[in-house]
Structure formats: structure tokens, C-alpha cells
Length: 157
Image 1 (cartoon, rainbow, N blue to C red):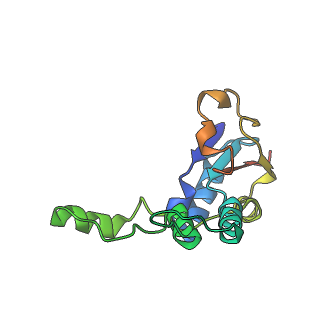
Image 2 (tube, helix red, strand yellow):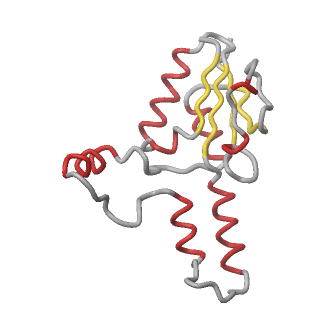
């Protein structure tokens, strides 16, 4: 395999599962193969919270408090338990795939890739990639304006 691209997947796994997935990507890639991981940018989310908490409060009705917005932005859990059919609620409780389990900033994601054996690991910009044709799969809404960070690494030759 020449390349692995994963956008907004890793954060849905527990940390140990994400580390295992990155090791498996390393195993499957051929020498000089590229892995590119895009995840929500924890640093950007925290900065947005700090900026909102420091901003003067308007007369919003109802007010959206910075802490509430921050928790929603993290996508850790829904505000309330799911409703609907019992089997759906059980499935949702058991899988919780749609919730974020772990979040990353550039430094922590770079460390995870190094830990999986990748070299030349670095944060990259939108469409700035060693993967040919990245423009056919990467979406700006997943990366730009603090939506996410891209980190790439290579399997050593």
C-alpha cells in the first residue's frame, strides 16, 4: 500500500485503539509509504473557548455560554441520552462511535506517529501532501479555519 489517508477517524477511537491503528497502518504501508491523518484541532477548540470566555457578554436569548459551546465542540457525548427504540439505544450505548474518545493537537499527533514507527513526521497544510491526488479526497471543511490539523509521516525505506 502506498498511502493511508484518514480524516476525522482517529478521535473516535480510544487512545490505545488509535495507537494500534497507527501501528497497523505502518505495517501495511510499503517502504516510503505515506500516512496522512486529519483530526479536529484541540488547540484551536481550546483557543476558541478562551476567546469566547474573555469576550464581553451580549444580551443573547438564550445565552450560549462558552463552556457549553466548548463541550459541544468537543463532541464527547450528546447533551442527553438517546431516545428511540430500545435496541437503537443499546447499540448507541455500546458503540458510541459518533462520540469523540480522544483529541489531539499537532504535537500529540506527531508523537503518536513517531511512536508507531513513522519518520519525517510533520504537520502539513490543506492539500500540502506527499500523496498524489490529495485534492480529490481532502475537504477544506475538515481542515481549514481551525477545523482540523493534518499530520503526515513516512514508513522508512
